[in-house]
Image (cartoon, rainbow, N blue to C red):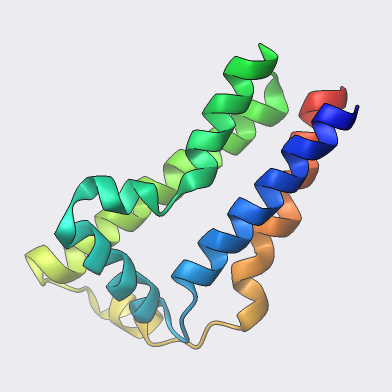
Length: 130
């Protein structure tokens, strides 16, 4: 139980790191920040998502792969690859559909970036104690 709580607390800190590094006022700002890492190297881009690697580590460490852990991994993979597709569409192809252009300018509330902190640690906790 103590080990589970330590892993959950580490995940919380990593999620806060991700939220801080990706925080911006608009979706375009978020994608612009991620693009700067992507342009340096795709490895830097993936480095900005440490919770994905941490979850792989937890799965190997605990030898558990249940529905909760699988859900976290699926959400993380879709999140990363969706961001890569947005970067390619906006900065490489430079063909932005009108509906996407409107979405890029929407203001993002500050609590939006903390959704990962509210979602993934409880899922990890349930995965480890269940």
